[in-house]
Length: 342
Image (cartoon, rainbow, N blue to C red; front, side, top):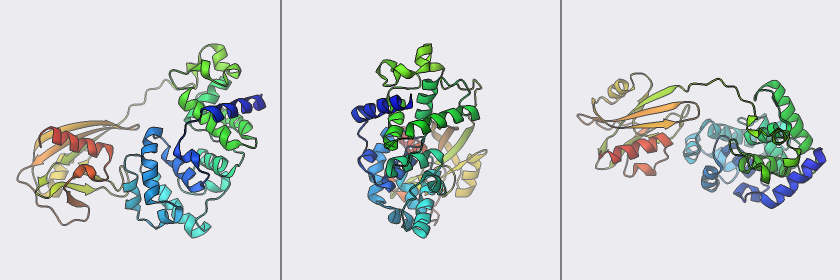
């Protein structure tokens, strides 16, 4: 059956794949960058940021020579900033140990920071033609339905069958196209809630379709996971020169990006008041922002009397704060304060 599936996938990909910037190149660096950007980020968002990032860091050596905060700033809007730090660390290792060249096999690629089994398989198959599988969330859904895998998603049994089938399909002379065809199917046809089974090139082979219940797969745990809440307190302070912003640390959430001066966690308002030597007297606005792993509740305050701008490298005045490299929650906080007439 694998040969028939391979032919169907290759025909489908040749005629139906989306024209995305990273599919117009065989440059391993650009393919690596796209795969890292696409981890837990929508394709449309990556399309917006991909060329801008490449204009600043067009190759491995340029990326390795940059400061970490510059890389995090260029990553603004993509989220999960540990990916940017790992990308930068990997570039430095490539320059130091591999003459700025990516390894050509999936096994060797996994030695680099931030490159796991899926990313290594994607890079090796697409950029170097290695016949290795690459199973991301989209591929997991396609193959779980194709095989009607009844084991719980994420279990050892499910992973063994998924990666085994993906390896069979990638065992050909065009593994990169096979892997991308599976990704494309999951992204455009075999969707989580409304699969278009009638348009699927694998429909005649699909066990879930034959059962009449493709939404049953992949089989997820029914346990509800409560996301923790992160509370933030921000200061809104405008002077003649602009609005105060500060740079976040290079580790943790929104690493290296700018935001209104803030604190997080319990007693955030009191700690921010003490740090700035100002009493936060009035709540101007609030923002609720949902991340995949937590809910962020931010409150924006005014201070009385106005604080004095300290001489700190991480805090400065911006004439147009929305032009700074901001996280999504920082951008929303600034807009909320402005909308409230601050």
